[in-house]
Length: 143
Picture (cartoon, rainbow, N blue to C red):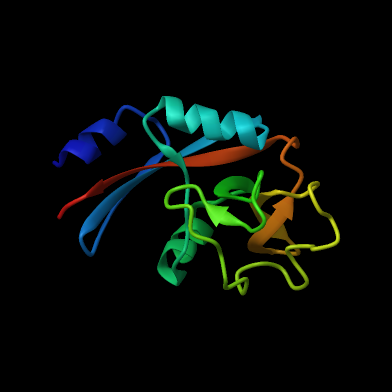
């Protein structure tokens, strides 16, 4: 068992992943909080709000998510949506619902949830002060 997997076992709802040259632990939280509280809660655990950039990561999210939840993608105090792990902007919005993120909602919908709508999940820009469950990730690079 790896160091990260041992660390992950402290949490009840976790999923451990190992891929390429990294390993990742996803911790699912059912309590509903706003985006900023979720962000802080993950940081206090030595984690980040979950990031899902590849099709395989999104497939994993789809497999385990039971309801809409916060993910680590926002544009708080920034001109574009960026990932919380590396600060890189999102250029491909194909994982969003059509016509989202809504550009006409400046400074209102600055956070991102993975949202269940009409029997399918997609990313959706959302008001940061709404409450939702969230997912944290702890990562360990194996390089």
